[in-house]
Image (cartoon, rainbow, N blue to C red):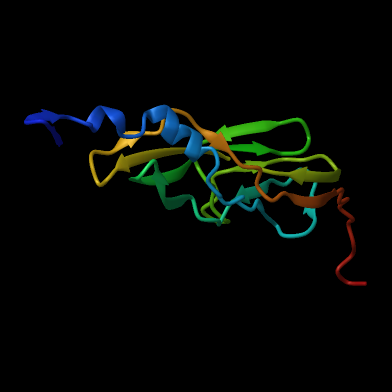
Length: 162
């Protein structure tokens, strides 16, 4: 409040807190990590056997930004994962996956060489330590891909007594 000749003038309207749209614009420019695509087995895989995918990168990041003099805390969370398997199949999950034996995301391949990649980020924010609200939108990062070959194995019967 400013006193002007005995009258109080409220200046709050001259610098309102950041709008959700302003926060979203900042959210889109945050240095979110490119989550690495991990695959098992490491290296080459075998046709007909599942390749397990997961990420072991940080799926939550906290940022503090200044928007017009307001301290805005943004918590970014990897809320969705788009797994491009490299063979035309795209898997959409809310799960970052896990390594074997707890794996939750896998894909079978034919022989060939593939590059698989992942991530969609959503977030919440608070202004000057106030109530938490959802960031109105998501942003994406392109995860570090994994390139691997899928080999064709043929069984061969042998005589164990030779």
